[in-house]
Image 1 (cartoon, rainbow, N blue to C red):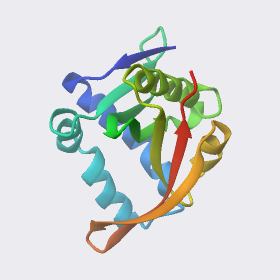
Image 2: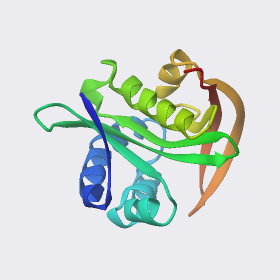
Image 3: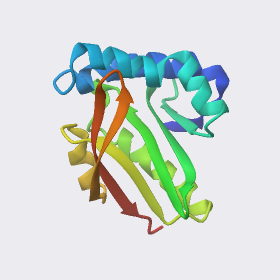
Image 4: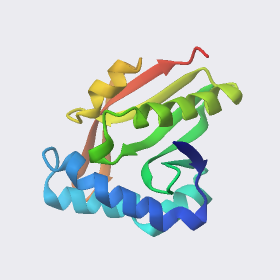
Length: 166
């Protein structure tokens, strides 16, 4: 497996990967209307481009030797002092549990550490099954947050933090 930094040329690929993961991840948690609203807000090509261009989010992709992509992540170095924020970490459902998410997380940890960050933080939906993955990889719950995202919808999240020890 190889992890590569994404650029604007990868916007369509990121959008396509998100389409394969998004509904399966959240269909039992969110209404179909909220699923559609949030996907458009966060994963439309325009939104991904804005995250790369304007917001300074870094995207990474994971692929095999045959150029088959299995997932992606986005993060922001020093979102807070000495803290990297993971905005997204998604692995195709058929490959979950095979260490791909951990490889993406390890790459983010190394990048954060190289930039003088000693903590990684993220928000995760309170009912997302990925909570088990995050707990297993050393994240601890440090709070809860309800974020108004418009159209009467809330993101109801746990805040998870992990200290980096490389």
